[in-house]
Length: 119
Image (cartoon, rainbow, N blue to C red; front, side, top):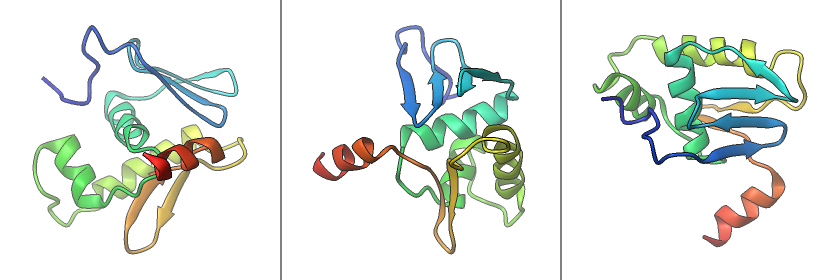
């Protein structure tokens, strides 16, 4: 069982900017347009969304997606590139961000950033 896949009682919808992730149906929309993702791309986006506005490093991503520590390959970078092509291309602002030397994050709305700082 993949820990990132929604369970029957996991019906939350994660929203940031104009991106909507329905975790019950695994449907992703940006600006009302359905975005077709592979299961691996969805798992990566869901992981970033669960840590909205927080940097997730390559090792953490690799561990969550593959169940092993990173092996030095660029597989995480490749899937980030695939996601950006589907989630960010043709939309503004870009939501999948790189923090050089740290990792990747999904951009949070201003209100979501404030809530994260308080909580």
